[in-house]
Each structure stands twice: as structure tokens, then as C-alpha cells.
Image (cartoon, rainbow, N blue to C red; front, side, top):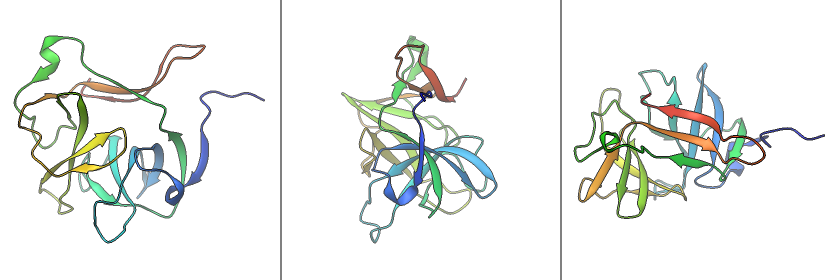
Amino acid sequence: MDFSPPFRTDQFERLEAGELFFIEYDNFHAVAIKVKDAGIEGQNLMALLGPDVPAKYGTGRLIKGQRTAVVRIGLDYKIMLPTTPKGWTQQAPGANVLALALRNDTLSIRINLDNRPGKFNPGYLRLPGGTIDFQNANNAALFASQWEIALPAGKQDARSVLRVGF
């Protein structure tokens, strides 16, 4: 039997850094990405990307990974960037916006490294790979606040996994 997309279930701990997945977490559902250990005592980490992350977590918050089953999307996804000039800005959007940062040819998702409610300490999750860049991406970066994660087109059109800012 063939089914599409070719998702499968797995345990969060078995995912590779940079893999995208669906998770049920604290009574809500989200798209998340596994984050490579950033020297934080060998913890498995994830960033909650959306679409409906409760305010107490905040979109883009970096949190401890959970020992739970997830729907594994994998590493084969596309980031669809804005294709109009108004889609890009030199100023980083507010903390409540899940923004992309493009510096030269490096693409990152701006995430929140602070786990205290109402606080924001920006970090940048590099794509692909899921590694954290603690340096200030504001230097020579442009930001996008409207973007999309999609599965690549095969025999059918690309399928959206997450739309941000639309």
C-alpha cells in the first residue's frame, strides 16, 4: 500500500537534529523541529514552531524534548521564502513573530532561548541541521515574517505543513 506523504511515527529521542515533526504537547498540537545539543548538558531540545502554541510557551521557544511518540516528517522539507520586496525587512520583527533571518546564504529561524514567560532572548536555529547560532543575526541579515514550510512536490503539488504570518 502507498500513502502520501510518507510520514511515520517514532520516538522523539530517535530524531536527528533539524528534523521536522508533529507533536501533541501539553494538550495542544504543533509543528516542531529537533535542535542539536547546544552544550546544554546533553539535553534533547525542540523548538515549537506553531501554528497554535499557547502563550505560556510562545512560538519559537526552545524547550526540553519529550519522551513521546511523534509524527516524523523528516529532513525533506522546503522553506518557502517571500517572493516580494515587502516580504523582507532590515529590522527584526517583534518577539511575538516567528521570523526567518537570512544572512548571506545562511537561513535561520529566530527562536526564543529564554524559558521564562514574557521574556525573549533571541537565538537563531540554522536550517538545515538544527544547530543554534548564539551570535546576533541582526548584523547583515534580512528578516521575513511571512513564510511557509512545505513538503517538496513529487507527483502532486507541494503540500503545506506550516504557514507563518499569512
